[in-house]
Image (cartoon, rainbow, N blue to C red):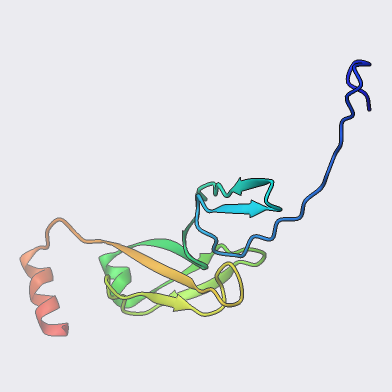
Length: 130
């Protein structure tokens, strides 16, 4: 189309930019030596991103960390049930192939809420069973 009859011609050109899963936020990708594209990734309210791995945080009580808890993990396309058993707070729990791509994983990060205090009776029970 013309630009207000001043002899200008507007040209539309389409470019295809391939962005690999796990491309870090802020990455600059050159396009045809003409311009660059900067990747800006919005934060997700459910998942954190660690390369091509997704990180999902699960909150649980101290009791649940010992005896287990079944919960639903929201996932891209299909949610699934996960049952935890004796959770160690510093250990990474990995679900293979459930990341951004088939090469990526889903990392479950557990945040355990410990009680502020225990009664003497609770302490004695724990001494016996642990």
